[in-house]
Image (tube, rainbow, N blue to C red; front, side):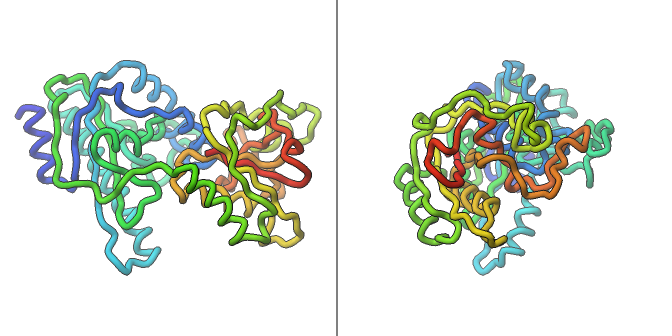
Amino acid sequence: MEAVEELETYFRESPLAFMRSVPVRSLVVDPRAKFMCKFGCKNYRTKHSCPPESSEVAEKVLNGNYKWAILFATTSRIPEGFSRFRIKALNYQKEMEIKRISHQMHEMFNGNGSDGFVLSGGPCKSCRECSLKLEEHCKKPLRKQTSMEAVGIDCQKTMHKAGFDFQMPNNGSINRCGCVLTNDRSLSRMTLSKGPSHQSFSLPSFKESRELCRRLVDEHPRFFESVRLISTSKIRIGRSMCKRSCEHFGNNYSCQPYAGSLDLELWKYAIIWRWRENSFRKYRYNLALKKIHGSAFGLGHYFSLSLRDCYCDECEVCTFSTSERPVCSYRKILSPSMQSQGIDPSSFGSGTYGVELL
């Protein structure tokens, strides 16, 4: 059976709702993806398929080794009345479904002799626990699935550009996607659909982001003194303020050398927020940071990134310097300090500040 016919047959019999071939150069790559992985994802440094382990795959994928990308996706409505627990279970079910589809696509391309490399949506789940945590080689290299996000692809914009909208966060439906990279010209005109996406892609406007700032102050007055939106071009950047003489240098994930160097020009706007200092644990700085970041992501700022005022003190002892492969145990608030990036918090005024890059 010809590769085209085999794919068409598979599409008709599978849960897939969409499949289309596009030139690889039309994939939308966003350099901010690597920061989203490093400072927010629990899989960073814990899976063979995720950054920084996936850097070789990213180089192979994005350096012109393939000409075509066959994008594929599923879409499912969330039934009315579903509790958040049932939605969470359905999310997991759909994530495993796209994993099975990605693996079947891998076997199909390897079986018919076509040249194809499969990228799945989301992290690899071939093993219950990745052997990287034990400093061992991958146990199932033929089943290992590198995600589109792990090589820097913006799934939302890529799928929107291809004609099948993705929305983040999802609203009333669940979409999952993956792609096959190939040089097989016979597959370059694949266009299959079982109907439109249940989602609609849109980016938050400046007005919506500004309204979010106002709402945060109104709804959480015990967290925030003020919240405002500015252009990142207005943030003064100098040399890193982290010194080797500082007790946190090399001992904290928010500090150098782990914090690395950010290019603030990758983000257009920034939320500058001032924490209302208090001694209540439930209103502590780290929870305020989490609230800001979650609100920005919930509005649709997929690549938002937090910058904190000084080192992170969430854990009594930071594990950065106690492991050969450091992995933060509280990644939901993991963020580099402003000082590590050459930003002086006092330039915003007196008090304790935070920055959310949008």
